[in-house]
Image 1 (cartoon, rainbow, N blue to C red):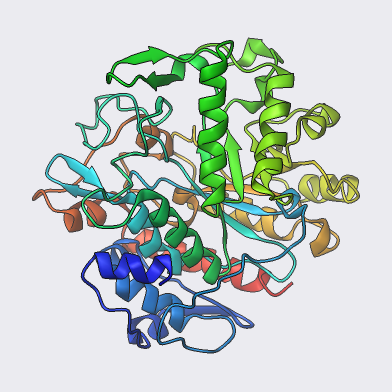
Image 2 (cartoon, one colour; image 1 turned 90 degrees about the vertical axis):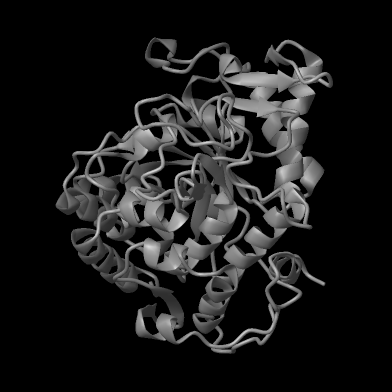
Amino acid sequence: MNAVNNLLLSLNETTQLKPDKWTEEHTFSSGMRKWVGNIVPSELLVRSLKSSIESLMTLNQDGNFYKKFPNTIETPDYGDNWGVIANYIEINNRAIAEMHGNICRNGLISTIKLLPAIPPSAKSWANCIILSQIFPNIYGDGYNKPAEEENSIYGIKLNAGYSHNIINYEINISPTEQFIAFNNIANFHGLKTGFRTVISADQIKVVQPDGSDTGFNWSIQEHFNLFLNAHIELVKTGFEAIFIDSAKHIGGYDMGNYTGVGALPSYEQMQYIIHEIRSRTGNTHLSFVGEKSSDDFQRYENLGLSTGTGYIDPNDFHTVRDKSIKHKYSKNYSPGVEVSNDNDEGGRSYEERLRRINNSLFAYEFPSDKLASFMQMEDLFPLRYDTNTHHLMMSNPSYSTDGTPESHWYNLFAHSDGKEYNKKVGELFSHALNL
């Protein structure tokens, strides 16, 4: 039995699926590509996992409705260099996890529930979901804390499995199989998937067999191997992209602007890591995305990256288009356009976000020349007024007023204005996906 059906059974659900009327009433489309729009996330997050899978079946691009989740799912195929022109949409899977009192869990299942509202890949380029958290965070993993207390997602533990914020350890299915199920479901919807990782040594702890933690050190071969093997195992579950925090500064480059904590891998170490992940998994098409880019493109290409963030002014259509034309033959590496990043502290108007999305999706001469783009969950689903993307990376508050997940989901996002904004985002994607 496939991992998706195993996940359903582990949650005491049946594997028989039926068309979903709610989905039919909220469908956006671009040719055969369909998703739900004009919504707020809580409408999806309160549903059962089975309802979410039925929603994705109802949206199926080939027009067939499968009464059971198929055994064989292929990733959307855009060739080995798909990452150079993809749209990357980071979902903070911890922020949308189930908040039961002070317990935080099931962020991966919450992300599956949100997938029907993510536009699938286009005719000419892929949409790729990036998960903010995979590994346990150093302080308070599996718990939420008051909004003013730090609980950073940028500090991780290796050799300690996966985060209790996102994995359900209470059901009879392994974390590995939960990841496989997630990736199969996302691929079925026409999405590629990836995850964020950190490389700053003082932001990583290594858990020892006796349960104690030691600081990570790139010069210790055991630590190096732990990092490499952990990422290889994740890629084997179906992830196809890795977003590398602070990648611009690998090897001591431009350290005057470095805001991470601790030593970074050498250029040669990171080259080796990227090469070995591709080689040992047999996936020549993996995309490695670097946080921040500069005009030293050959440095990033030789490192093994596909694209990087933050180099191009996203607000000016003609600037983006000119860069697209300039890099149209750069099929191994090119810089990308940011709608927003993980350091976004809010305050940007809906109009500016929509303009940046428009420029990311349409500023080129031909669709095959599109530059990669980078968006956050907030760019599709606006957050409540008193929080922002970066705050939710640095802390893990519950916004529940009664201790239930449903209340947290309802209060995390904007409502009437957020729903109208989501409709406008859907309209932009509906014009773009059939290009």
